[in-house]
Image (tube, rainbow, N blue to C red; front, top):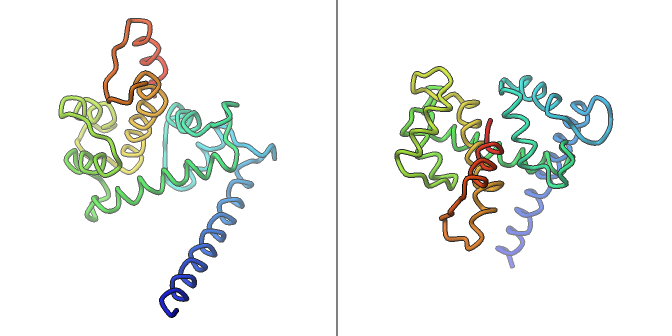
Length: 188
């Protein structure tokens, strides 16, 4: 009985913390939703992320919204925002685990982080992506560089690759039209 009561108390505390965090996020979301529509635009999200020292090009923020815009209306509701927030928190924790007090990740750290998150790329594909997202071209990935890279990979996998990998085998064959569709929809 004692162990069951302890576990119940732990679960109750976790739920209370989750509710407090959700209330905090709701308040933040409502402040960002300056026009009080119940949803936020890419520009509103970009400005809000910048307040938290996360600077992204508008195209990356638009990709974030597309990834979690479950109702496909071009904006982000609070529930969609919660899903994005969970993904961003996962990325921030992974980054923090590997940055070793430097404030940045090296390409090998980025590879380790991407594997932890669930992206299994071969070396040529991985280093090609790294080169594209190394904004300063110095082999040092700040948190926003790392998040941008992961947004790209998640979007490529979830929104594009998986739609063509209907047999769920991890391989696809594309004709030129499909390839053009993929590249046009995967730009950041």
